[in-house]
Length: 312
Ligand code: ADP
Ligand code: MG
Image (cartoon, rainbow, N blue to C red; front, side, top):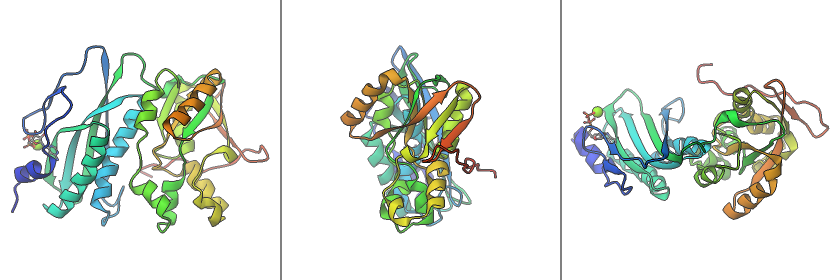
């Protein structure tokens, strides 16, 4: 039977391509040499079997998603992804599972120039995957949640609600892809530096995540529900309650939600064309209490579910 070290060597040890990792997998620590003048952005996310993914979840997609959710956090602060650490707990040394997991992980890592530089591997009662990702951003240009200003436009990338729709309708292939293999908006995050005033990634639902920007920035906001870009699949379902719950409160979309001065509107639109990624203006930041008003087509405030809470 393969030892812990055989598994690490077989599935996770690859030579770092990024010159600034002096030592990667195989020593006591990874050793990095960040460039002078750059800030290091660091984030971690944990996926637990039975909580964040189903026991039978496809391992290749899981390898992708475990890294994608971390790259999404780096994008939301405007950092360029560079390195990742992977801590993994498994009930047994299932090599077919590890091989597929590593394939999904490295396919995404290579696409964005991320080196796996270390981690930990252990037996555990259930599958648990914790990734720590690090990125670089020039000093003083990172995108904080706290930067929104009254009068800013509010924008969101891509489409939202698709991942949550897949939980209710797993047979809708487009939605299932959004849930299981989200695309982190890495390039957009980097390009929003110096353009956006505040940003966050939509991981827990649009209303809740926008609420985090409002709280940190001490501002309010108005969003027009009809403007929210959503999966075409909702049209044929004709279930307006489900649609509202998915679009306003569904999690796992990993789109970027950001605010920018209204004077920069044309620049945001030009960026959308350049990246081939829709960026939709959904509302505006207002002065006053950190409250979000979502208006329906008649201009009436809508009620919506609170954000997902892992302990509720
Ligand atoms: P230590 O005993 O110093 O914690 P380990 O024996 O746990 O080291 O790990 C050996 C080496 O393999 C270390 O460099 C560690 O970072 C790396 N490593 C362990 N598990 C993983 C993994 N799942 N992915 C990437 N690197 C790993
Ligand atoms: Mg260890």
